Length: 290
Image 1 (cartoon, rainbow, N blue to C red):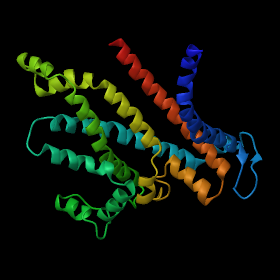
Image 2: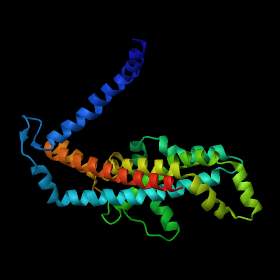
Image 3: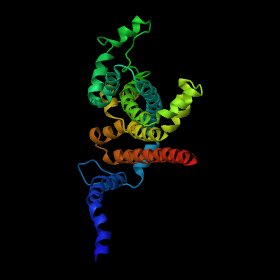
Image 4: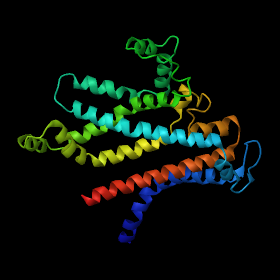
């Protein structure tokens, strides 16, 4: 009898979490998948249409633009943000005066609401009143309407996205660097290794678990980017900065095409899952090879 209870108690302890996961994650995912196979406007019951919404996705040029923009945002933010975060973490791991203030200053954008960050950059990049254009013109760079020009709107959002993500990457890398034994750097110094060789041959290899974690979480965040884009450009001008999530919000709450929006959401979920599994597989294989 006692052995029977010992087997049941662990399942009872995890039961609340399993129920919460089923109610708030699994059931919504299944519901979204069902809606993606229907024509649903929230004003009447869903009408089964099969794969019609997915077929429409294949011929929707605006959705194709949103996929390309999301991919470009992912490429433009993840690797540069992690690289800059690693360099800053390496610099701020040194024992210098005022490091706490610099760490807090760099991490600050990561704890501020993305809407507040976007509103601040809207003012700074205002072509008539913002301080960015006069500053650039002081250095001989011609100012322009960075967010209102289709040629620069997405790249400007990417730069702001990198800036907001640097602090989090820096904190994670900094925690990893501080866990590396100091004796490794001292031994490398005795062998005449330069600062760059220490970074490349000691710091970077020992930070692979943190790098994999940041790469996966940053990928998921970049695929789901919405608030920053919505406040800065609204996806425009001329869909030049629209992303998959802005298209989902537009189709669902502005055009009331919930079935079509659900199909885009399923596509986004599948793309995120595939890319994350590939990254996890590559990272796990590299760690196993070591």
